[in-house]
Amino acid sequence: MKATAIANANIALVKYWGKRDEKSILPYNGSISMTCNGLFTITTLEFSKEYKKDRIVINDEELRKDEKDIMGQIERIRKMAGIREKTKIVSESNFPVAAGLASSASGLAALTLAATKAVGLNLNQKELSVLTRRGSGSACRSIFGGFVEWLRGEKEDGSDSYTKQIVDKNYWPDFRMITTIVTEIKKKVGSRAGMAQTVETCPYYESWLKTVNQDLDIIREGILKRDFRTVGLQAEYNCLKMHALMMTTNPPIIYWIPATMEIIQNVIAWREKGLECYFTIDAGPQVKIICLEKDIPKIKGKLKNIKGIKKIIVCKPGDGTKIINKHLF
Ligand code: DP6
Image 1 (spheres, helix red, strand yellow):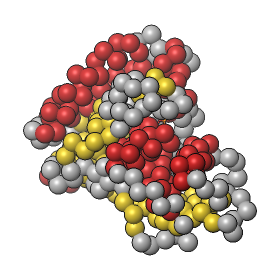
Image 2 (cartoon, helix red, strand yellow; image 1 turned 135 degrees about the vertical axis):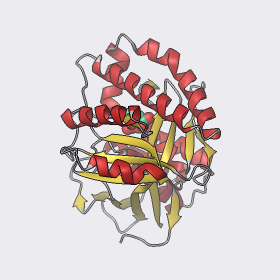
Image 3 (tube, helix red, strand yellow; image 1 turned 135 degrees about the horizontal axis):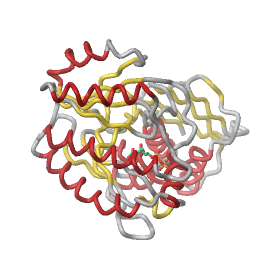
């Protein structure tokens, strides 16, 4: 009863921010993302009678407190499989955890696939996306590779809130996202608490919901046509609308630090001078620059002049979550 899975993180071009059902993780709006080759989590998981308690080791550190998201998901899978064995989970990511880099997405996606495989549940990708969603919303988009849409769904039981692939990773191979890491400090307000506060207190939340379907249509079409300008501009606008919601939540949620703003201003200035790039930012200070492969050297050169940047990671469209044979223990 042991399996290992690898999952890539994903970065949204149309953001998910707000749940209509917090327990089942059902979103108020649909979202679209790119699964990122290069930002991954590998998780090995074993259920065994030998284990006396559940153990979780993430990036070589044993977790002491009860991890609700992870254990909630494990409990769900135990119930589905009708087993009671304790588990050992070892997980490694190649990027900073909890700094707005979608670590929960790759983490929960790898965990869900490895756990279902370990107990012998053979779910198809749609079923797997519904189950992964229960662990963390954005994680369900990492089940598929390439460009992915998470459907809002209408049903109360959540069975129609799943993900599907728009196109695979080879459809738009020169599409890139450059993740700039400006700080590795853990953020103060996590997405889960932050979005709940927004839904409750932000006076503009209804207005956001009125515009998201249009963003989804424009970006989905843009991806299908490989229309870079349309996708970039609309993704940037959608991101700014989400951050406007965050900032006008009460109390306000401001994820940006000075380096975030500096990169935003530069991206806009470079674009005005003909270097085509756009930005998007999640629940954290890191800016992801959306660009095409041919412009990477130029953009990398310019990023060297921005002092606040500690590290960059270039991602292209990557694979969905899959089982691998090499276990971490
Ligand atoms: C800003 O998926 O981390 O990255 O469903 O509560 O686990 P939970 O939240 P999470 O939220 C991600 C928010 C976002 C936007 C996005 O990825 O779409």
